Amino acid sequence: MRDLWEPTTVLRGGLGSAVRDLKSAPGNDIVTTGSITPVHALIAAGLVDEYRLFVHPVVLRHGRRLFADATGTAQLRLAETRPFHSGIALLRYRTAWHTKPSPGVRRLP
Image (cartoon, rainbow, N blue to C red):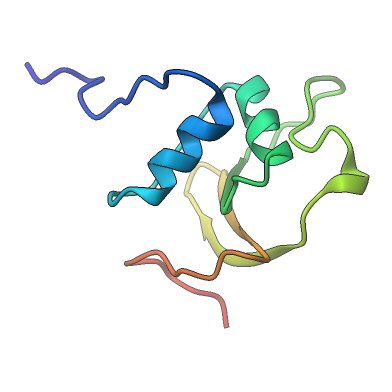
């Protein structure tokens, strides 16, 4: 059986410098899921090129916010919407400084 963590890279040292090194190397997208603390650090360091938000048709009254301080939020451009039969929708937003298109993606006009 193939190891599910096979493409994983364990980061050493500071998060910001490690991610900058990964971004400067050839390869595929760098993705993080389900861990808001490092995501907040990446946002603060200006290292996020794209947000992929899965919107679930559930309203919660509490929880940690992606953009804890909305006044410091980067300008975002909607790049894709994709609804699923479950009612969940994927919304992809690109940051203002990142314009490289992802291959095989349905674009909005």
